[in-house]
Length: 300
Image 1: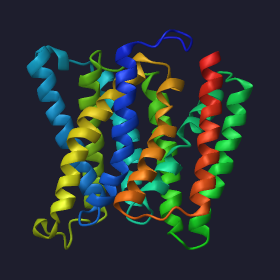
Image 2: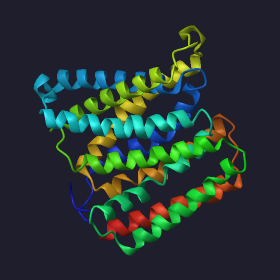
Image 3: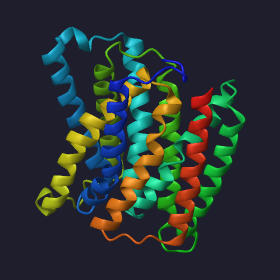
């Protein structure tokens, strides 16, 4: 992984742009998909389909040998996939049955603060500004929790998103410190298949299949799921996984303060989600904290 002060290449900026914009729109896609689809089963179908498609593309473009990996690499990819996609994304999908997409995105923006905490726990010493950013992020998180405490949204949904952000942060932190398949696209495919299978098993364990009929799924939910498979998973998640191996984690984490802006705007414009004062104020504080963390890390 390049050092934080190294010049950022064109491909890195292109991948960041994809993660910035496309992932910002996936919160809207998830919200629409779960209108008529079970959360974990839809997430599982999304990731398994995207993972198999990506594996097929890698084998076609680079040959089957590009998918080779040792047992240790496969195990690491599976663990990372479960942390990111079952623990991280899966919990967000579940939460979006109870909280607005914009609020979910703002809660997810606190991910860089958890990454700083994990780095400190592992013995690294982030800059003083990073600690200030963590405090700001947690303060913003407290304000964002107010809609749940006041009854405007379901508190369990808010807490579920927060749990998902911790799992996502652990997966992101873990991925750069364990043996992974040499081909980052193959690694993404294995992660998505493992995470997708995990989501399907959890969905079946929760009984989401009971009373569910494909005929009752709306056309907009199918469209949203297709968008999530192609753009949210196949394209954006692959770009994110590549960035984890090609750019400083502090830079990759900047998506967390761009995604919420995109998500909040789309939620308000398309779904008519209300912008309450806790969402506006709390979101601004979280974004300020993330900006402080990233600016501190980029100077180091």
